[in-house]
Image (cartoon, rainbow, N blue to C red; front, side):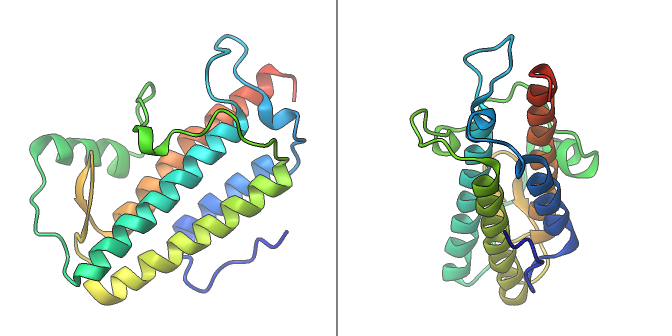
Length: 183
């Protein structure tokens, strides 16, 4: 598997890609189906990865939509959105217990994949996201240009940081699952 840095991948997304690939690439298809022992209905490792892949695609899609319009968002942030941005992006804390929007919920009946396959998917998806984000910065500038459903209008650097904090939240979940299963 190639995990070389994309020309458009900045250090934030590259760090996320590296951390995730290092964590999952050695897992077997059976291990990627592990769930938290005390929460058997929670997502398995593969579903966590699939959730993240859906978020990367969703982010790419909304950035592309904004690029097609040719102008950055003019929507102002609400007080609540500013608070959420501070908690997640500035403080680097992703609150536990958040329910994922249905659009980024993983399927429950996917074909089992091993860690190598998941790492390749992560690497490709994050690289593609990095390319779209870089294009947005070139086209729309570095200011707040694309709106997140919960955190409001954000710059592309804020989107990168959001993906890093969100990804690390799920990295901790995967690490906890592996530890529970003795890995």
